[in-house]
Image 1 (cartoon, helix red, strand yellow):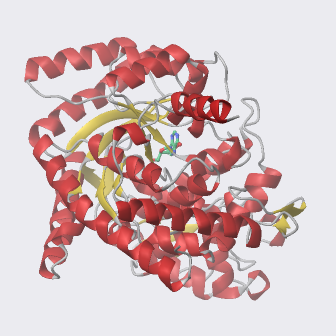
Image 2 (cartoon, rainbow, N blue to C red; image 1 turned 180 degrees about the vertical axis):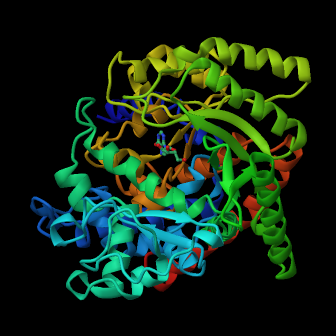
Length: 540
Ligand SMILES: O=c1[nH]cnc2c1ncn2[C@@H]1O[C@H](CO)[C@@H](O)[C@H]1O
């Protein structure tokens, strides 16, 4: 029996040897070993006390049994009540490498920013009633002062659909039958976020033919665009994104900014602010945030930010070439801010990478001519397809030399591609909560993340579109991943955090600095877990 147990142990070690959190790669400190045990105890206890399968929560189909890593939108408030969540909130998270900027600030905060702008008007394309509350969506726009209106209400019987009402009037006079001003907030926020009833009920399909969940997902961006792409709101939005990320323990952010629209609406209500001014504004806010942290003696909490230039995966190759040239010009003017290039949007229904391969090859050539480097950071494989165009995007992303892969969800079906990622150090930006809400995985235990980690592929955990999903910061994604596996421990968390800096676009010296800062904060975090363990009598 002794011999059997030894063989058994060796087999397990061998099977897990490719994992980056494997003991062979780094010796944990004694404190870490003890803190790991505390975290595991809490997880085991809460699996019984909180995620007990006899407990249920309300669910669009009736009731849902609780389990660790269950559907995020029905579990969210329970997650927030756990000890594990409280502890992970304190964890230094490293970098956020995959987030779409226009979905990074809480919907209620965005609405408050909008209410401060008299230029912002709202209209409804149809009549609002209880029956149309979810289907008649608000449209926002900042108007030049000459076009401001004084219409009193968007719900009045006399309201002419598609006419602009000042946002404050629309809110103040929102009909009592629809909930008054709070009803207005619910209408707007409901259009900016995905609700459980949608993800798990009415829109629960990712099928190519119906795209239900992506219909709702896509529409949230149409609604928010009229608010965010307005200079006075955009600048405050960026500030809020940076500050709320820092508050969650994130020390570096690399958002994808969508440059599809060639202009932003300026403070005067005219759509005439070109991309280079967006970069200037971003840099100004970034410097202000850094200066205010330094003034508070908190400079070591944040190392900075770079931008992944993104446009949509639609249109002709010629049209895409306008964007690659635009990106080149911006890289020359803001070399320290442009981190990479990507095309975004629903992979299952929009254009595959291969359609633009010659543009991408020319883009690389142009970079050589101009002496600049703009790595691809392609979205690829965010699909359930097997051999579909979205799945095949993985081959093109890798062949085109992508530095990281956005999602790469379907890569676990491709042994050779995983080997390439492992050997070339192509990191996967995995967004587990996003994948679950967009119905690629029914819950966290159904997510392929463990398969990918067991193959030794580097992963950075990311939030993708936290304003739409409600997974603000990175604590929620770390939580879901941590509770859904008994293999994952403190060393797993540490590897994920470290990889998010190692595979970022920071320069080598900046990475060293960021990792040194992280090391100090990590040591404090480990002490915090130990103190927590002592207070809760969880230590031996
Ligand atoms: O998970 C994703 N996969 C692909 N595209 C996305 C995802 N999340 C957001 N966007 C896209 O980014 C744009 C906003 O910046 C939107 O067009 C949205 O479709």
